[in-house]
Structure formats: C-alpha cells, structure tokens
Amino acid sequence: MSGVLPRLFETPLADLEPAIELRGVTKSFTTPSGSTYTALKDLDLRVAPGEFCAIVGPTGCGKSTTLTLVSGLEQPTTGTVEVHGEVVTEITPGVGFMFQTDAILPWKTVLDNVALGPRFRGTARSIAETAAKDWLRRVGLSGFEDRFPHQLSGGMRKRVALAQSLINEPAILLMDEPFSALDVQTRAIMSNELLQLWDLTRPAVIFVTHDLEEAIALADKVVVMTAGPGGTVKDTFEIDLPRPRVVQEIRFEPRFVDLYQQIWEALRSEVDIAYSQTTVAKERVA
Amino acid sequence: MTMTIEKPVVSDDQAQSDTVQAHKSRMRRRRLVVHLAQLAVLVILLGGWQLFVGSDQTKIILYGVPSGIVGQLVTWVIDGTSIGPLWNQIFVTLEEALIGFFIGTTLGIVCGIALGRIRFLAEVFGPFIKVLNSIPRIVLGSVFVLAFGLGIESKILLVIVLVFFGVFFNAFQGVREVDRNFVANATILGASRWAVTRQVVLPSAFTWIIASLHVSFGFALIGAIVGEFLGGEQGLGQLIKQAQGTFNANGVWAAMVIMAIVALIAEYLIGKLEHRLLRWRPPQLSGPDL
Image 1: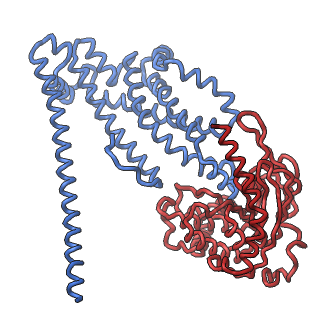
Image 2 (image 1 turned 45 degrees about the vertical axis):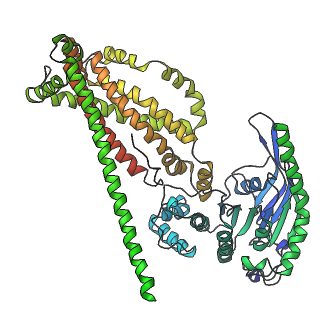
C-alpha cells in the first residue's frame, strides 16, 4: 500500500471513514408482468475516500444497479446507502456519473455540454465557460469547443463526458462500463487518461466493468459479484500494484498475472452460472 | 528516380480532378433530365385537360379549364374579386390561419410537454383528450360560427382545434421518447426538474414537434378555408363558395392555385425553421426530398 496515497499519510484505506458505504442493500424491481425481480441481495460495500474500486461480475449481477443506488437515482428496497456518512435519499450531491452509452446532450456544443454542471448549479455563464475550457484542455479537446457531439469520434465523446463529470469536482465518481463501446486501443488510451485525471482531484471511484484486465489495471480494489438475480459481493481483492501505472504495459507484470489468476478463479464460476442461466432461459423460450 | 515517382503523383491528381469533373457534369445532366421529365408530366396533364374540355361550355362549367383558370387569376389580380380586392382575401385567410396556427401550436407544445412530464396530469386528462380527438373536429366549425359569428374569431378557433391535437400528440410522444440517460445525466449534473424540462426534454422532443408542424400548417389552412366556407364574409373560402355558387369552376381552381402557393411558401419557411432548430443533428441520409 505504500506510495499509493502519500497525501493520506499512509493510513490504510480501510480505516478511514468510508466515502461510500452500502449495508445490507437489497433492490427489487416490479417487472411489467407484475412479478418482482431482485437485482441485489444483502450487498455490503465500502469505498474509502480517494479509493478506486472496480466491480466485476457476470451480466445481470446488479453492477449497474449498485451505481444508480449510490447516485441516488434509485432507492434501495431494504438496507442503507450512505455517502460521507449521510443516508442517500435523493440525488447525491458531489457525485459524478459516466454512463455506458453517450449521455452528453447532442443538441449542445462541446463547450456548452461541459459547462452544464456549473450552469445547472447557478454559476454565471462566463465563469462556467472559462472552467469548461480549462477542462476541455485537460482532456485534450481544446479547439473542439464549437463542435456538436455527432461531429466527434467515440473516444472524443467519452472525453467530453469525462470533462462534464469532473468539472463539478465530484468527491465520488461512478462509472458504468464507460469505455465498453470503444475499440481496444482507444480504450487503453482513455484508461490511462482517466488515471491521470483521477489523480488531479482523487475522487472515490466505483468503476463497473466486464473486463477483468481493465479492472485490475485501474483499481485499488476489485470487487467480484455473484451471478444475478440477487447479486451480492462474492469476494474483494486488494490490488497492490504501484502507481502511477501504464495500463497498456502493466498486464505483463508478474504480480498482475498473479492477481488476474486469483480473481479469475473467483469470477469464473459466477460467469459459468450466469451463462448457464441465459442458455436455460433460451431453451425455455425455444 | 525522383522524377519517375513525382510524375505519376501529378497525373494522379489530374486524374482525380478529372473524375470529380466527370461526376459533376454527370450529376448536372441527371438533374436536367429530371426537370425535363417533370415539365413533360405537367404539359401532358394540363394540355390533356385543356384538350379534353376544349371550348365545350358545359364542360368548362363542370370541370374548368387551365386557360380559364389563368384568365380568372389575371382578372382577380387586376380587377379584384366579387367580395373585394384579391389581396384582402388572401390576407384575411392567412391571418386566420397564422394566428390559429401559433396559438394551437403553442398550446399543443405546452400541454403535450406538461402531460408528458407530469404523470398525474396525463392520468386525469388522458381520457378527455382521447374523446375530444375522436370527434370529427371539423364539425366544430359550425358550432363556432353560430357561437362567435361570421368574423375572424370563429375561424381562428377552428384552426386552433385542428392544429392543437397533432402538435399535442407529437409533443407528448416526444417527451416520452426522451433518452432516459440524458435525463439521468442532467439530473446528476445538478439540473432541477424545470431545467431538465427546458434543456433536455424540450430540445429532444423538438424533433417530433417539428415533424408535426408540416402537417399542422396544412390543417391550419384547411381550418381557415372551411371556417369561411361554413359562414363568413371574406377570405379565400368565401371566394371558393361564391365561385361554386355561380357555377364558376375556374374560380374554384384559381383559389386552389393561390392556396397551393401559400402552402408551399409556408412549407419552405417551416423547413428553414427546422434546419435552424435541428442543426445539431447529424446530416440525414440523402435521397429525394418530397
């Protein structure tokens, strides 16, 4: 753990008051046909301030639901979700959310999109735009201020989304497979840039992904979830790889391979269960 | 060596600009052919009509004749119509159509978005709107003429009623089709419900609303004309009614030509507005415009 968070005076992350804490969280939805679907069951999760936590798990295990609960977009059916010690009942203040699909507004220019956060919070236009330009420079999009999203590449749109989230300087950043739509090379580049930007303000991050390599390369902690319905935490792995990391190269380190094998061991059976569920469901349909 | 490499590059450039030129002239020729074909269709239709009717007075009374229609238009422009100068008639009809169109559109957008955003309102008013929409609204024209007289008000009301529903249903649907991620994202970025409505829902629904404006303006003209027809003193509808009453088929057709011109101009302006409001959209797949 040494050297990971020097400004926190080497305090083990686990001892800090958690930035995010979910206790015994169950979330059920009513399906259109009237039955209930339990997405999460008895989920416990703690993320320390400044900690980068990745959640991996098979399709349909409730990873994304966890994020919507932390953001306050949804409320848990039972259990509590706390952010900085406060129970979440509405949209959590100081939270940033990056969606899997593009969620930047297509009818606003790049600059207006990034300036949205401050504008919604009542900042004057000129100040918001100055801040937006600053963030666009940080994500490498200076000169693209007047473009509309459809004129940008997928990677560039992700950068806009990143700047749009980070301009609010969130203490918590929630990311729902943000780079899954990108090609492999762009994805690696974006992952590196994410780590550099994360280092600027060090928010607590929950990063949901299918990709175990991505999870290990980015995170301080990888949480493996069980197959849904009723997903919960199966196991947690501390990632003690030194920072700063280079995402493209870290996967060749022996320690990385080691961790990958350990975590995959835990993940594999869940993936098998999830897969057999989908095939059974398919057979039933057929 | 360098020479041999450079040379093909130059001729390559030349070849490319040649292909571009060839492509352009091919496109020009194609356009010309299309226009000629259109002209031919027009000549066949109008010429056929003219030949079919000929100078047979009965047929002229029954069907009208292209040369007579042109004559009627010239007379109207120079000498005015039986109910006053032609410009006045056009102005009155346009006034009714435009005022009704703006009020109806505004009401449609406001109500559509309100009901789309506020579930309670949708549940309360949904059945009423369904019932109102299912009655043949054109009949309300008679009610309005009886209640509000032969003036401009009864026509404007009819136009509003005709325009409102189309715009309303499109706005309502547009609100429901808004990408939930956009709303979630804006909400997390700190937008109030009102800010979400204005900055996310409204622009998103505009794609739907604009589509309905094209149809609605047609309804606005129909509303104004039918209103005048049902009872009025001025306007193109009255002109048509008078022409019909005096067995002047040419007059009916001439009024229709005027309306077509007005409708085409309006269509052009709405197209401009659409382009302006929706310039954030990626260019649409190209193909013949209708």
